Image (cartoon, rainbow, N blue to C red):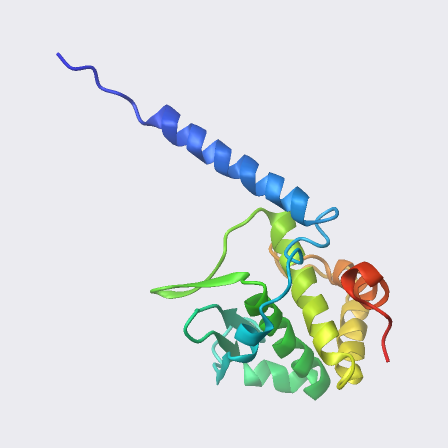
Length: 188
């Protein structure tokens, strides 16, 4: 009689190897999670090709969807109208950052973020914030200042587990603007 091989130990080993690899990559990419997702040059050309569409049923002000043919950024115009044009410009550039660093993906039935450990997800947010700051600081410094002020005024607020606290985002944004390793040279 043939012996049945249980796939459970193999599945558990594969899962654990994946978790260890994700944590190892998170450590290699970031400095304490802060720079995770910021390890390579951004794909700015792809980010700039994004189609921008209005969707006022979104739970967030903006969401990016990466698609190699034509990435999309969905904006909740109702929420963005409440924050003003400067912060709205930063939030749009932040979503471009997610596309530029390939932090998001598309699945057939809706918008889905790439799954990763929380420190890596937090690093994605820091990298997208830094991308927005670097993109806007020369031509729209008020947008960067608006984002920094927004984060600083809500220092202890954590919107969900995937996003770091607003205070951590403010600190990371200051690092991005001042640390030469992040390409920073201050805010004009």
